[in-house]
Image 1 (cartoon, rainbow, N blue to C red):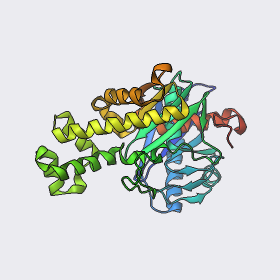
Image 2 (cartoon, rainbow, N blue to C red; image 1 turned 60 degrees about the horizontal axis):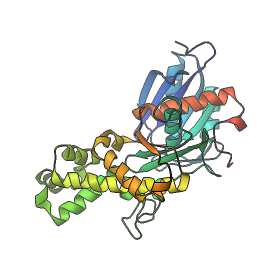
Image 3 (tube, helix red, strand yellow; image 1 turned 180 degrees about the horizontal axis):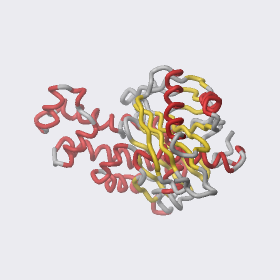
Length: 333
């Protein structure tokens, strides 16, 4: 299967801290084939692993290019990984190294940018003009599309919305600051809020209190969401607090960017039925001048965990078709 005579097949790779997932994607955003491998710990072995999965897919499909979706800082030329907290690269010219090894053009992209591009081309963001994607998982990843172009800032790292300070001297964040938005609106935040509530009144939730007492590290955002689904009082309160912070944060985002569409993605979005309607209410109540402006539509993502791979593959395909300067990226380079 070739995806059409005039549309080359490309590989999109989600380079995660635990696993590498590589997929062959056609011009319609359809995943044709996937290979998964564990993520090696060293830079050399990681690049060996990436080359190996691409060659395996090349043995089954006529591949024309490769895109890597990376959770970290990618430079403005999409060639170098400056820093990735869960990967062994630092100021590493990954694109050129892999291009030399594979004989194929390779581009890099921030994973949230790749996911937004996939949703824009084939999913929930289709038809949007100015779109913000907020990927809520362990933390918050974000991406911005304006006028049909990905906005990456002057040096390739925008927008870091998860580290906007929403609570002065609030919860400590691994980034070194305190009170970042993601410390109150993420899978990690669900656990932190649950533990805070249990500390004040453990009797309100026998289920979560039992889990926390047995092993506090075993309590997860997914577990909290499941308990809320079952009507656990503490978990329900946690989800309400999460919805409040999501709505407030999205109001900040709209005051900054005035998007017509916001896409909520990431692992926590699978529980959107527990918080999204309430978050919309907080959003509309908190945004500046709500009675005198149109509000952004807020949707959940459609492409799930495949979005990063699909977007990276689509951006790699676009790099084959147009000059680098005409790529769908912001002009702030």
